[in-house]
Image (cartoon, rainbow, N blue to C red; front, side, top):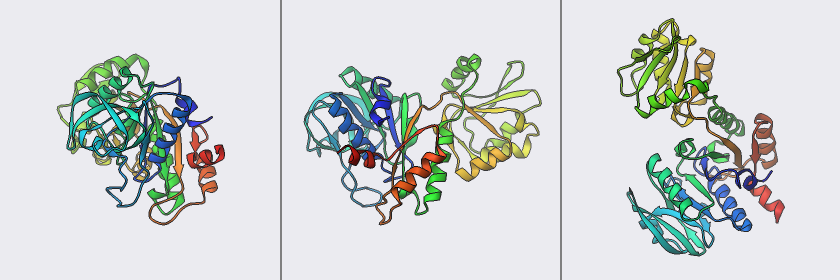
Length: 346
């Protein structure tokens, strides 16, 4: 199945996030733009940060620009729109401010190249995506710029495409392992439906609680999990069932919990979604071996993994081997080399 077919008539807001800089995210984005245009589908495009620039601001290398067709709805900071070669009709100046000015929603009147620098908070990003739909976008694509994977949060996008590539490491095996790890995180199981509504309130209030086997809630008096692992661990008892952690989590938190809690294996640790988990693949494997079980309130809907066998640093992988190896490791998800698909269609 083609990448566009995984999206069209199924989802309104889709994010494209990268494993690293130059992983092929912009290539995948341009492919989607072209194919939706061929179908006559009006799309919206915005970003979680700055992207679409001709020169990569991190690696100082040339990168693919974002080409937008006529009638496309875009949302970007005012300063970036002034650099666009596309002719634009301003639809709305939003209340979302960035270092490059207010985020402006515009319609493309004549096709051209653009640089996208969108909203800087999840709440604003979702609001802007919804407004773009109101202005006529049938599908809104959120570009997770500069390795910012928060666009994949289920509170923002309904589905996610993960871009990976040779730029992540010179060692193809390492790239595959890191990609499999990220897919595993994005595929974490959700919580039981009977406790969803109650837990949603906890995350809305940004609380930290422990729930025992009778359903009794015990508040943990902390404001962040950072440097709070021992406090959390000391609250875990034999009767504890869930540890609900608002905000982000890191390995040190679990390390401290394990050091003080005898019953740390007997509880399920719940986070809002997988974008809140900041662990390396090595740390993830260590926690699994120690018996830590993590679940999410909101599951990420991962549609596909796209790959880029080329690196801007002067090396590349064997494209066929890279594709077949990833497909073998990820049999339950679509793995697509969009450049290969595009060349085959021409």
